[in-house]
Amino acid sequence: MPDPIYLTQRLICVAVIDQAEDAVPLAEALLAGGLHTIEVTFRTAGAADAIARIRRGVPQMCVGAGTLLAADQVKQAVDAGAQFGVSPGLSEAVSRAARANQLPLFPGVVTPTEVMRALELGWQILKFFPAETFGGVNALKALAGPFGHTGVKFVPTGGITPTTLLNYLALPQVAAIGGSWMAERKLVAEKAWPKITALTAEAVKLIAPAK
Image 1 (cartoon, rainbow, N blue to C red):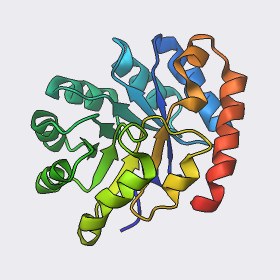
Image 2 (image 1 turned 90 degrees about the vertical axis):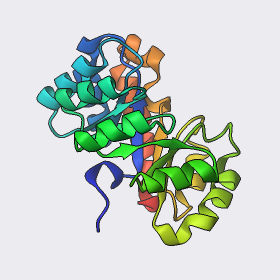
Image 3 (image 1 turned 45 degrees about the horizontal axis):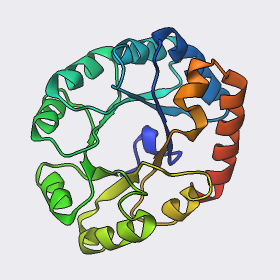
Image 4 (image 1 turned 60 degrees about the horizontal axis):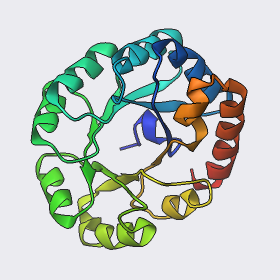
């Protein structure tokens, strides 16, 4: 089965959007840099509004909802048009809500026990978070080993930079990586769209051989 559209580029921009009116210009800046996938985190009150604005205004973008901590956030994300969901940990309530709303979910894991439970719940694309804090590439290699036959894939996120991303993408168990350096919160707040486009273009060029 081919990878879903939100994994084909193997790079997801993880963005915190404080003002919903910045959502469309941000998506346009990412798109101008060649990136087609954004994860809008539910760390702000306007996250659902931001997702809805991008889905309406920039239909070329694939939009996910991140930092899903509760079932009601899953419903808000789906109602806003989110195409996939991401959670920093493994919550059965979030998992049930995602299943009920037919939302593809990347639950967060860092231990073999959490990977096993996520597989039991039916998820095969898992967020490895926080990646750098929990051992980075070497930890992910070790974690992936016992589960190679299951088809599980990982989306490492947390502390990844342009200098380390290719080390992650070289692992066959890594479906994509999530990063925020292309559109850091400060850059979005400053509406630094040309800078975001330039950083995105650099990242897209860097990962091209790993696609």
